[in-house]
Length: 293
Image (cartoon, rainbow, N blue to C red; front, side):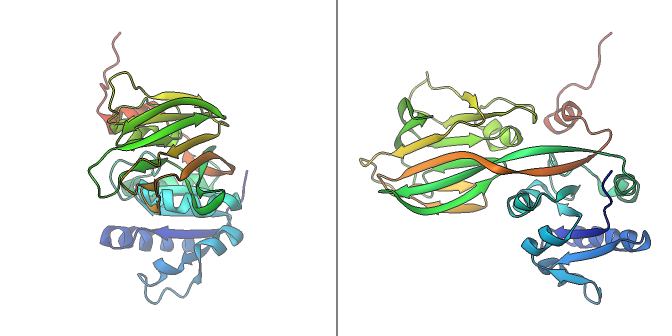
């Protein structure tokens, strides 16, 4: 069992509810004898805190546990920054759906207290590395826990591109773009675009075309270690964008290549012992909760 002595706090900015939860969490952790470290952006929201403050990257180096207060978007940003440090991350939901941030504020002290007492389950979630290249020169890169999306940006025109998986040509396509999603991201944008729900333990990636110009184009699930290469046709008249988790954006041009592969480092995600993926799906997606006998 891990001993969580130094605990970092990250919170979504611009929300009074998040600030209230951060205050409760800070007080609870200090009463339990833990050292609390605030992300620098959060520290400004808690005047007079008298606690250690550091950057998100430094938090990954010095903390035994990081608690993120906000929605899944807040946890996505934290995941990209913290995965390389192998620090476990726990999510408190102050957002919308909450597939990743699964502790509710109503149960804050009880649930966090149980985790600190060693009553938790841990799992690894893999991320994707995305690189945009032009003539063998790398223009930009980022990582994604949910998805990497090629899209037209502000244009309403379709993108023409060629798709390759592990060097093998798959197809040429004209569409609004392509979503490349992890199992974690399969319940996000990929699901809205008609992609399958994938259990988080799967070592696989789903490729979901966005409004393709043919009815025969369907989502494809490939092995998790596959290298995915999307070549943007030089015939395009628009300059598309690549978005990672909808939070990091890289501009592209006709002729550029998008390369996506699994990131070597993984996110360590902490859940309460009764965490259940299917129960979350029932709750968040409106599935029937009735068990027939």
